[in-house]
Length: 193
Image 1 (cartoon, rainbow, N blue to C red):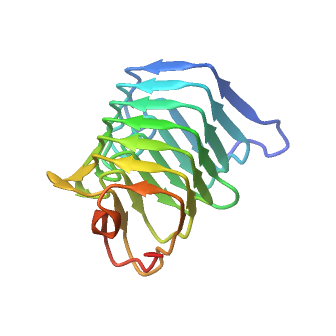
Image 2 (image 1 turned 120 degrees about the horizontal axis):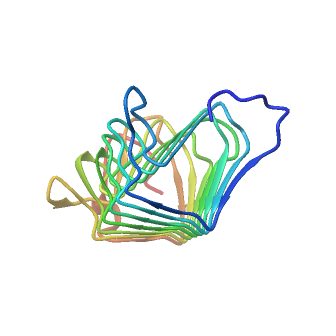
């Protein structure tokens, strides 16, 4: 979806299985789903496995969109940034009740987020990044994270759960289980509350 008419209804992906989806030709983002400037995207109860993108969002790429991604499983997806999901946009983006396993990227083994509003009740386990954010790379963003499990994620072979990329990265954390506690954080962000 790319800059579709905003008067249109919403798009719903529910109970879908995306396996081995990948970008082709000049489209280099979003191995399974690509949305840009589309405010009404709901993805739920779906599985994304072995999807890949040349650039960003191995399974899902959302730019200037308002996705709600819930109750999905992301396994073994890869991209340059955001092994499973790459999300940059504005508004009320929500990532809730998902499972992320064994995804990989340079930045954000499972998630690369900028301007994501809320990340709730996700299990993010055994993802890898080569540069930053074994589980999640937060870029110039201040999301609220509630009740997430971040465990066994690595950056360049070293235990690392989160990268708060810069001083504009100021997330709030509530009741999360993050392996290593504050030692699982890297970056210049100020959100170590």
